Length: 200
Length: 172
Image (cartoon, rainbow over all chains, first blue to last red; front, side):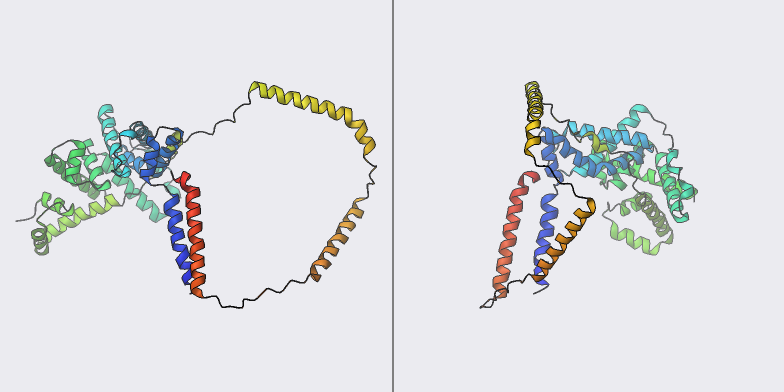
């Protein structure tokens, strides 16, 4: 009986505290749609939740930190402007990441960017332990291999591997035939494997 | 006949209906198994890419800045200034009367004040040590654990509902 009471009371209390006091994405979207003084704050909370993942989508595709952060900001500004058209039944996280990928694609196509490698990441290499440095160097090789791919290849890798879309979903998202999705994806992987294998 | 590149990719993407045939072939063909392993390594390497942190907070743009306290209306500012002036004049006029009314204070030395405080403190401690606590009443009946549990559950539910009502607006 002594141990029964705390267990009985603490679990509902914990559930109540976590569930009732933390608004869901859906709650925040509904608040953001109202268009009143509270809506910007609610959307700001959504940004806090997803800004890192959105930034990483942009960074994997663009491979330039400043540009990736600017574009991630642009993604959220555009999303906020169109939040009232958002289908509340969809999940916000996957949706905003797809928006980010598409915006990066448009950006690259319009700018015809020849991506410069970002040297900022290498600044602190000397201070890292050996194991961490090896991991970081390998990550850098993967990022360099990714950014060396043609834009379309990069996009299908992003959508398949990091956003876990199916072939059909990628075809819809990029508005290309299923056969193109497969050929882009398989060729991209072949090129990546060759580049990473060659750098070993 | 070896597996094609497409078959291996679709197998790893779980996008094929030929899983059983492919697995059967992989069991018997070292070359295809090695190709699959290379592809699996690539998948693992792509998955291992760590997420980087932002150098700035993108949410800051959407967080409303704290607004400055609203300035008082002009007529209210004037009223406050007038009140302050009247109060100051009243104090200056009343000062001679106040000085006459207040008895002359004896300013004792700091050590005397300290000794008085210490004496007072000791007195309080003595009083406290002599306090006799009343004996608590004993229950003449036995409280069943069921009643106790029901009471606690009732209190908890009341607390839960009360907080729910209080937080209702915040949740919205």
